[in-house]
Image 1 (cartoon, rainbow, N blue to C red):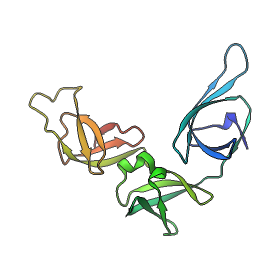
Image 2: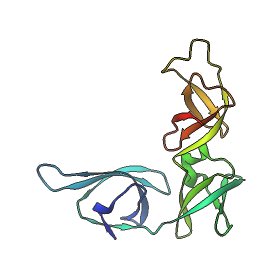
Image 3: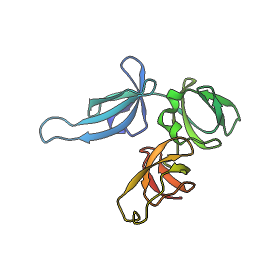
Image 4: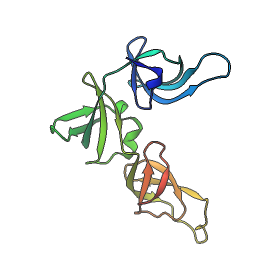
Length: 186
């Protein structure tokens, strides 16, 4: 058990009906009138549903026991992603739902953090930024080298992001895995 003062991003809570919810955002609020409270945004780790929930300050919440392991993405097996534990070399099949948006930036042999609760994979966390090759984008026109302009680009994983006009096909770019934003050339 923990109190609402211990909340942080990524913490997995077991609420009401035993469902697991990951803390996406939290904010401690201390209004001038009335008691303090914590405003949170929670994501259901199984369904992906996001809800806003408010807790009174100091209330006890049950924290789920989550084992986070570093694993290497090996290959796709149908709709499942197969990860290998880097310590024990055990293979684990992970559903597309558990991988979520991380699938857009996942390449073979890439390391990721896999969160497991009671044998079930909850979610897969990639590093904050990854380097990927632009597989297709329109060529920039002469004079388009100034600031501000963007164009769509398809990455080697199939994900589509917005890049500056000067980026060409075959270049390696750095992408933020949380937002899908272009961060710069790699």
